[in-house]
Length: 361
Image (cartoon, rainbow, N blue to C red):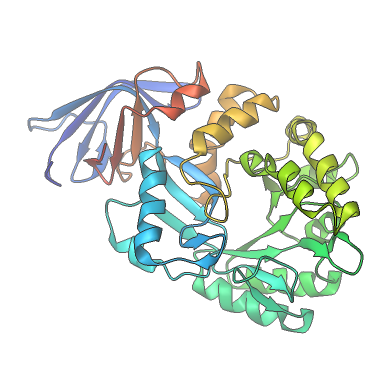
């Protein structure tokens, strides 16, 4: 199909959670609601803005950085699942070449993870000490697309459990520097210990957030700090705990507790008004293309289906500062045979994926 083909998307165009229109057109890769004076190829069904995976890693596997062919395969897998916008939450690979590919998802990068020395997965992160945190945050803020990713907690081999990685003063200075440079900051956090310091230091988002409690959830809500629960990744906690039990029994027990209460934690955060968005954590040890499964997990946790859908569609795009299905926006949309608002499991089977105005699949 030519880049200049006019498309006519008809059926129900879900321009917002509660708003639908009967049709739109795609002209020169952009959306219009004004009928053009040209023949068009018709695509029929229920149309959503391209889905968002707000915690994904393109260019990374469980060993570290991967080659371009592997990165391309990862991005194509996400695209074919309907994910057309990715917030890459840390990668050691330089995947800027993807920006030149009109057939691959758009990526918002957080640079490379910043971790404490020997306190994260080998080959993933810059591993530094607190005195260097501000400088590295500034470096990754300049390299990224408006986000920086910290590792907020990890297993401390001396204590045998998850502990906070950074002193309060270090994160306060680092987050202030990121904000000065126009970047938002997020942090990997499994446990409870690091959360209050990070939120009170001004952080914008927490990844996983399994350590939220009745003491910290109100703080998140008050400050408007978002969470990306990555429940499809939290499902791996029992296996991780079993693998580390002989050496780190306290850590293993802690991971199991976090796992057991995962749904209650997410539901309590939602009930308190904490912003929640869809992310899969694909690209470390987890497969790509799991965005539909993560939406289903949020629903299982007790989030209303329409809100879970918004967490990967309209709401997620607004949070990341990207357009939805408005006049003149890039034509990135996914078309389904049935209404995904009625059953989020519909997301697992896109009928058509349209990226930059071209029908991809």
